[in-house]
Length: 176
Image 1 (tube, rainbow, N blue to C red):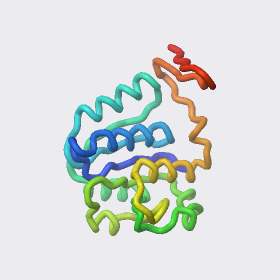
Image 2 (cartoon, rainbow, N blue to C red):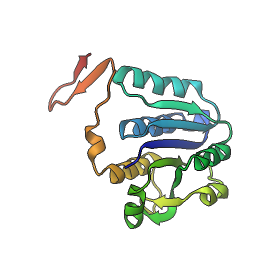
Image 3 (cartoon, rainbow, N blue to C red):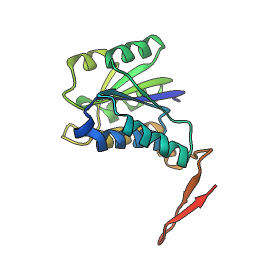
């Protein structure tokens, strides 16, 4: 079982990727990651948005910026993290699911701009959820769902200001 899972967003471009990078971070948080690391262009607005969600909805999710993705990957490797790079060119997730489930500390690389060859080389696993063009958000969600086997859908987040209550026909927002 993973003790620490971080998601590194590779090569963020502020204007082009603002919504997709935000969605990568929010998906990471909602589905069990502990930390989001943004690389590429620094984007204080994106980071503030994610921090505001954590404050309102709870949890201990961290956000950080790195100006050197390669250094961040190497530092995590030195701390015994396994590196998973999500790519449509990788091994099928269903073929390596058992290996991935044995990982204790994990850094997941989610691409943005053209992914440098070095990202493939530094990764322990280059993983595809499909070999067809798709969204990096969907790839991350599928990886986390396969790892947690659906348990992430029931995770509880402590210390939030609000909680959404499931309802068939209306919005129910409860203040804590």
